[in-house]
Image (cartoon, rainbow, N blue to C red; front, top):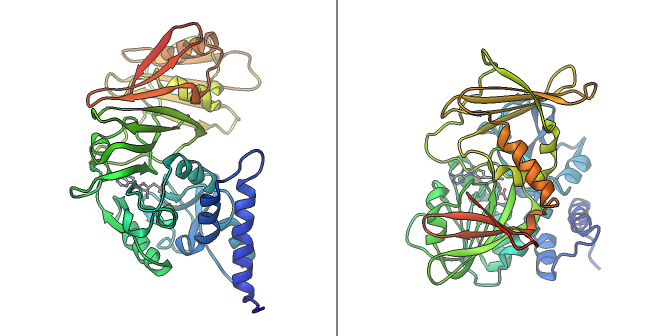
Length: 393
Ligand SMILES: C[S@@+](CC[C@H](N)C(=O)[O-])C[C@H]1O[C@@H](n2cnc3c(N)ncnc32)[C@H](O)[C@@H]1O
């Protein structure tokens, strides 16, 4: 028997370890998916990524001194941040930086859940929005065949790099640099559409480019933390129906056009203070956070941070009418106080959502359905008492 070089042996062992760790508990990957994760390497797509320490990000590439630790991280079931404020980890030099992550390689078990929901067979035509590192595209190529896969990212730095790395690994898919909100450039139609960046509403182009009977797997996320995955099937009449999946998913948002996220004012003059019915920490529960999101005004933005005295501070702001709500939770204080100002009390929809959530016995996200027509996208919950609740996205 030929002996594999040590390096290759270590890499294969790490890859097998990853698949084992993804299968912990009651999760079992399908044979096709396990095969894909065992055969497609992750390390060529993430030679350098950021290590996070609080709000600082430090690039980490493999060195002789820490090769094992680096490889263990590459094959951990974690997301690996590769870009912060569009500065690629490979361009950052040794310094650490602060900012907002703009690209990453998704946690493998989340990728597996999405690929499983996408139901990809050989020859299935797939469009991926959000090429990032190219690792998910490489898995799609394994499952569908490279000729059937198109992947789009809005960053040329990312598409150029990912395309070169995909080519180095084998037959490459079609890689395009474009605004994924418009789907893939050209007239192509796909049996499957998967997004690896989140949207509040699913862009019309994704439905248009999906054939009737085809499937879409899309991360839905608004301003609150509780992102979710929607799986929809396109129907012959052009509408689509589906469900929210059980897996929580906080993907970075699809950035489209020149619209910038509005800046939340540091403080406001003349705020009204009142006792809150709920603590800001209710949003730490992602199932509630998903439910609460359905009740929030579309333009609301949110900031969440911890103060030096340990207080958890949540701020909501709607630039439309300068509505503002700020709540600080301190373990030492019973009850929470919310400060609001502007046209509306922005904390109220959240309190109402919490009351409704308890009345409905904390419905789980996978109990919700999604319907989309060309003009309207709705999330619904059919309660066992016969009532149906609908929310427009
Ligand atoms: C979580 S990463 C994608 C991970 C990727 N699938 C992988 O395997 O590495 C999200 C990606 O969405 C991309 N993105 C954000 N806005 C976009 C847009 N309007 N069109 C296309 N891609 C976009 C980002 O550049 C980023 O690379």
